[in-house]
Image 1: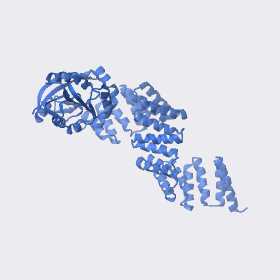
Image 2: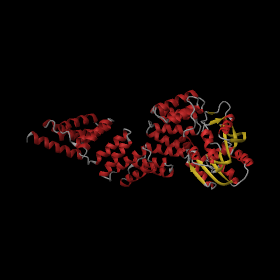
Image 3: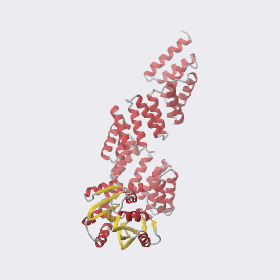
Amino acid sequence: MNARETAKQLFFEALELVESSDFPNAESRLRDALVLAPGHAAILTNLSGVLFQQNRQAEARDCAGAALAADPESVETLLILAQCHSNDTSLSEALAAYDKVIAVDPAIAEAHNNRGIILQRLGRSTEALAAYDQALALDPGQAHAWLGRGNALDRSKRYDDALPAYDRALGLAPDLTYAWLGRGNILCRLKRHDEGMAAYAKALAIEPCLAEAWLGRGNALRDLRRYDDALSAFDRALALQPGLGSAWLGRGQVFQEQKRYDEALAAFDQALVLDAGSTPAWVGRAEVLRALKRAPESIAAYRQALKFGGDAELIKYNLAGLGAEPQPAAAPEHYVVGLFDTYADQFDKDLLGNLKYRTPKALANTVTRLATADGLDILDLGCGTGLMGEELRALKRTLTGVDLSPNMLEKARQRGLYDELIASDLIKYLAAQHQAFDIAVAADVLIYIGDLSSVFAGVRQALRDHGLFCFSVERADECDFVLRGTLRYAHSIDYLRALAQQHRFVVEAVETHVLRQDAGADIDGYVAVMRLSS
């Protein structure tokens, strides 16, 4: 038997050994064959594949490179090379290899799918989604491509689109653990916590040691305020994966919400040891330090959050509250929405029970005294859960509520008081109204707006002649308005009177009241009623 035939026999013996996963002996046969047929592309390609299976990435990559020198358009070799680069985290090189595969044969669905995975790891979610879609156009039965599509949509915050992708993946592969995990994550982001927890349970039934599923459970339980259960879930995640910074972050957030500030600070610090660029951990650290009255350290932590790409508008708003940035004209809209969407379920109980909230009753007493009739068209700006509406029901012909928070509006809807409820910024809403109301009331909403000029102008336009503008503000003495460390604005009485004069309002009453409590201390404010002059 000549050398060529011997090399061929060794090559086929190696392929049989690969089939039985005997990679060391397969490697031996291929190396012997290569001695007899140096530079043979097929032998080099299969040797690179065998080395890859033995987790010898560098050798596999070098061998694949030699094979490509002999056959530059070998799809099999390019795929192995791409996998080597992926495992070495040489993602740009892996992407280039998949691009070459597709250039040679655009119909290989696996290459498009794997290209999507690389693009996702590079943070290029839009391109990743296009790659997954191309893979699925070629082969709709790829469960992993549907999984990847779901992940890309999740990363792009297209949650309603991501869920069907995970469902398609699970329809094809019911035991695909990470599709259950993704489904759980999406459902919990959509506040469908019971369904999300069921999805995490499915993932854990398949893979009980999946730390990410325990992490997801912890986050869901924290959202549900089941704090002890959340901490247990985070602990399980950390026992399985001690370097999981997100679990330390979750622990910190639980402790923060429980006002266990020293424990929260320790957890956020551990999260930052594991990931020094974690914006949520820097923000959490900053908020805890602010609560502990350690303002200079809080400012420094907010600056770090800003450095690592945090929400610049929101972080600067927080810094302004600490006197470290110029104060903006108003709170960021998404801050207000997030605050009250989260707070909606506990709002009435907390405000009335814990914070001794008195503003609606104080405003209603003053309005009732000054209103000249009942059967009025009333606009409740920043209506929240409808506490103010309850106090004004005796005066109303119609009652319209406007609020930024959908969750708060849902609570207001359940009262059955309002004729119309609108999700809108109050200044934008007012700009579209013209002499539509007899009374406009704003209870504890102007504390999130510093410069009230646009509010007064909008209310003036929305009210009929001699209509009443009734509102509360927190009290400031030092200037027109100031953003406090509480992240609420306070306004001076001189500023309110100046705005009234500027916008043709007659001041009927400005009364000093305790509006609520905060951290056990009374919050002083003004309850004002002004009448629009003709």
